[in-house]
Image (cartoon, rainbow, N blue to C red; front, side):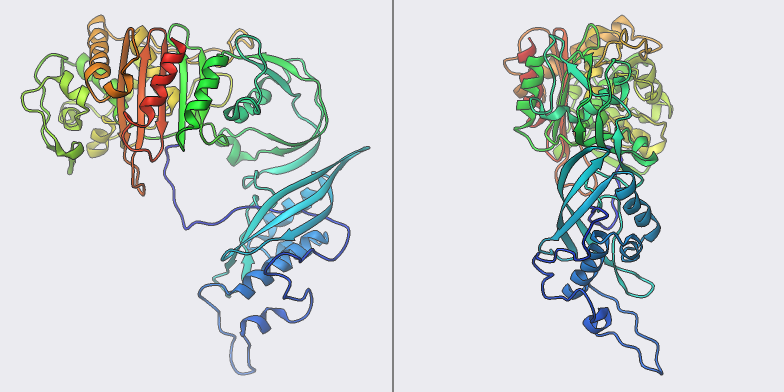
Length: 556
């Protein structure tokens, strides 16, 4: 996750079109008291116009009558196949007309029955039952959706707040539903040992399997079946969301795609994230870049590969390599760690305002002293950190090709206080667990190897590379910092019992509007590197740390 956006919240969820009979189902709570004809909104809300006065524009919260009447009008028209009337009951009639028309014409959905549920404030849930029909094949379709009623500013009229998700909750604005021969054949995804990967077995792999199908369905030699699918629009494609199968009318013949996932590690990763809400983790093989496991507590979005979140103090691994290379820090030399340091008119401080008097840089790294890094900002150029991330760690160049959609991090060039904040993984820096697992792998091996889920030999694609490596001296000190942190620093509790050649770094990333920071942890052990995040979890050592440590033990 990443880029922060908040607007006044609007509920999104969307219905369906066409249907045989004219009567809408009105058995749901909150609807039965209102007739399907006559009355009109004016009689309900008390707004009338006299011959001498213009009608007053109604403002303020919607009444229960306005909500149920508006929802009833929309659902009745939609079920009856009256697209124009249904669209007119929304605040975006053009978009509604297009999607509702396509619901019948392109998605081949008929015999629609819409049953409203009990309204909650301005939101009205409803269920959809229909039939999808293509040539001689038919299958029932059933799902739940919801709509939200809003008041139009210009005249106060209550209308359905239109978004594509009203039609189906898996739709994003700009998407559409299509039934027909699937554009891509299905795939049978295998783990590294030849076992089949399914969503039923591994809950986190839904987005991964969708991505594998989209990229390799045609190349893997399968034959397409007949399906009802979400076809993504430009906006969803820009976010790397894959097309999605909603209903399979007839089976295709799948092709086979082998992945690098390790079945034991993947199962362990699924178990670990199930213990922590909003957690994600990724594990890679240091010597090759193979992705051995990736899991998310919220399986609807692959945060492990596609998340865009501030990494907090785990970013200090990259920053430390920069400072050591430039002679601004050395593991065993004294280094300032004051309570505060001001740069670019921002006053930065450490957790609980601690300070280390006369301490070394290793001590500051192990205890995650923010000011030890911020204090070096005046001696750095605005693009130094960006170049270090790109040239040594292979991050932020938008060129990773792992086999499914992914985000390869962002370290934008910034100035003043924002540049200083980037040094400690705040500001504009964005990462995900796969990125940070790769950072630990680079430290352990000394060379960046782009992570991948499908071997490049399958399709001849080119993997990303870094333009240079760290010097032997820098690399040795960086390993010393991470090893010391795993043994004696903020990562020690989580890494207790993880034997062998280990290194780790914790992180906490503050996010506007969150009471607790996102907790991060990245580490390596032998030929394994892993990283995890627990959003709104707090300190990384106690939240993401146990997840990562458990997987390093499993893989060892």
